[in-house]
Image (tube, rainbow, N blue to C red; front, side, top):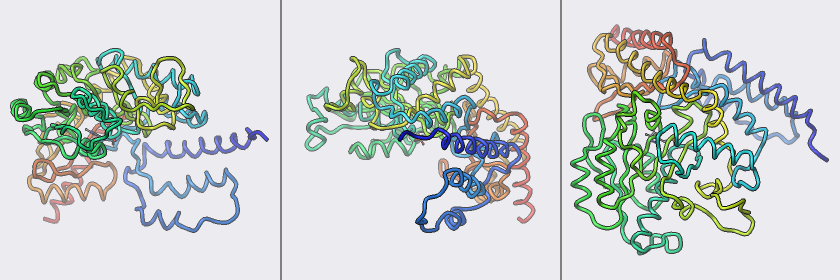
Length: 463
Ligand SMILES: *Cc1c(COP(=O)(O)O)cnc(C)c1O
């Protein structure tokens, strides 16, 4: 018996209607959730019943029960961590990807998704000004994007000294030195841990969190053997970019592979007015970025870009009898850790198609403009200091003391009308803003400044 399309029609119609209830609520809804995890566990946490349940009723129950425990992350008033919203075309494409239910592993098995992802990858490489012909893999996020690139790096630098890590592993292998800046993202350490490379050798960062080139030069001089240097495009707290051209040249002179973690910041390379800050970015060997942050596609979608031909496939590809090749080209599974996966590159294609070249530039420039407006508006409030040079989408705020900063952060989160993240940077408690949502506009900026003003007033009134 084949599937009955009507059963899907009823569920999808219902899911669309319930999705629209959620989307309609976002402009006026407070950003913070109304219920915590324990409350949600009470709602969902009963034993699985014995009898089957109607599919429409399942979707209905899910939408109704989950509502209070959802954070309005797609809201233009959400500024937490580095989390983007969703462009309409990207959301629509993501729904199609689920309906198509393609296993995107093989070109031979799913020609449409393979072609769409290849084109999306070429567009990305072009927009970011990276070397044409680079291998592109779509991963769950930048964590696995970093992992994918560093797996290729590990294989390549070991191969250069005659060690085949694919067959021999790391047991008895020459030591690979990995060098990274003091303010690298935690996911770099995770990726290195998963690769058996341990913690990196850490070099100094400056006041904006950028790697200090002279310290990198010293670190490179002190080592011998295979080496990998990890740079950063977009510091979590300042948005700052490492000095790419100089750092890459130093590393390459020493024969090191250079990887750039540009989870959100690599997108600055697409903007003519921002690209100067990443001068030389294209001279590296690999780059990781996210599409679910700056590009505003739904979760989850990261990107691994590897310039050196064939290296990704040699490190990550599999050869078996049942994985049938369609020509010489690399298959999706050759350049990412997964075999089976959803066609997560398709929403990237849709987002880029909706925006066009000019729209990508406007998206990135708009996020930066909103960040600068927020910094200007917030620094006019009593005893508020903007700690970073606002060169991209991130703004780090200090409220005179660690204690007052923590109190304002707590008051803001309790208020819930907007969401920003508390963090620690360079030894101090801070409140951090990330403007990552395409929908954030001037009204949201004014709304957010007013919300922080309210939080300050409530804290100061009880001091
Ligand atoms: C978010 C982020 C990551 C990790 O990306 P995920 O998509 O969460 O896996 C890595 N590096 C930087 C700089 C980030 O901002």
